[in-house]
Image (cartoon, rainbow, N blue to C red; front, side, top):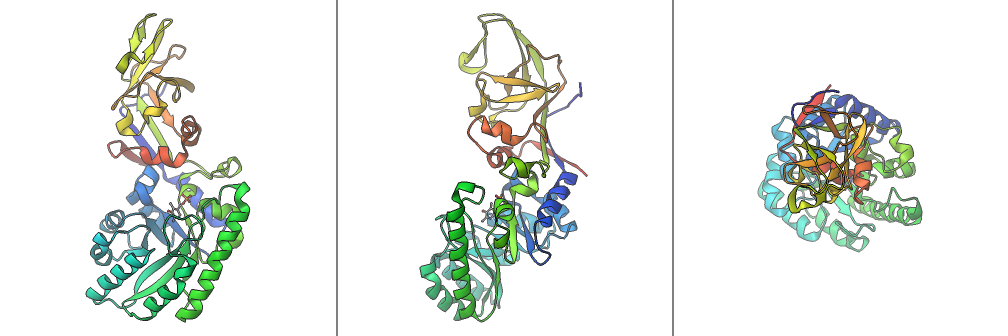
Length: 368
Ligand SMILES: *Cc1c(COP(=O)(O)O)cnc(C)c1O
């Protein structure tokens, strides 16, 4: 049995390179590739992931919030960084750190123009976001006229890209809807381009869009989950390698006699002699309480051990009655074989949620 020392999230940069190359192999050589590194690069390590992707000549990064972009700049990342969901409060920081905002409403556009003017900017790069059906963020087709008149009346900003986001690119039952989104975006983009007199980049595909809608790649694509090793589809998953391995250690082993209980609220009660292992990872580390009481499992000695009773803040207890193991042995929560997706599905969740839930107190290590 491999031994362990503490809870660690190992990040496999070779797997990242493999995934990046797989995504690139789906693109024309003229299509740029933006890596989405929001939420600590999907719970891994945004700085290390971004540094490594820069060595692989990635074209662009995206983060959700301004402070995520500032952290990348402070770590020496020099590639362009699109901030998908900035707030007005942070607009000065955007300019101070050469970040590029997504402007998604008149409120945001007006406020950013004001900030760019205040900082005496000329042609500051911005990205205009259009809502084509996700109904989350973005101007609509009806806003095109007013957006254009604002853009054409200032010199402080310049549109680097127009973009949209697909609502159901992974869902084969929604191809009509997605095709409609793609068509609306094209109409909007054509109108804007003819009125602007120059051609910004166009982009709308996330990972599943890249795979399922090659005709919609346009000038750039935005990949997040694919880089981290998941493709929202069993066939695509075969070509990708999950980059994150979350592992921990058996801190202690107990033997419960029939009638004895385990953990808070006595949620598990032994009906037969039960051997349990206590692990130093809990809901504060990203193990959802929903995974408790037999729903979730970990891997010890290549065998599944169910989580018994309630998930505690800093610990879980698992059933090792039929597993040959001892204190100090390594425990896998998820890795490339026992994937985050499989564990997430146990509680109606998705790989994205489980990966991004791994909290910052879990140490990250890199395998190069
Ligand atoms: C998060 C995000 C992405 C990445 O999506 P994946 O499914 O992880 O590839 C792309 N675009 C936008 C606007 C996003 O918010």
